[in-house]
Image (cartoon, rainbow, N blue to C red; front, side):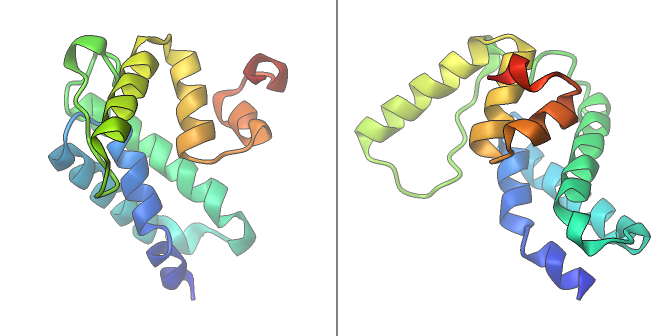
Length: 142
């Protein structure tokens, strides 16, 4: 049962990885490392109802280690090095322009606001979950 639950999160983990790396290759590598760590550590999870927050905690820790390992000292969405990665296969030209513009604007935000936007809109976390994850008040988020 526990192994099956990880399978249902593969695409979400990949999407998470895409939003935190510079290239598809890095996203693939990060997603693989997150999933490997989750499978290895899964037996330690005692309450399956807490799987999702546990998984995103694992993902956050693995991502920090991955970024250090890759030598990424700059912000993950540096304006100068922004690389657009399409997670969905089909975009019209107009939607692609809007998507590029949005990614550029997000890249220009400070790290805390960028993290809030990514966690809320891309990772679909609630304000309460974001507050707990970033250790900031809910009022700061809203």
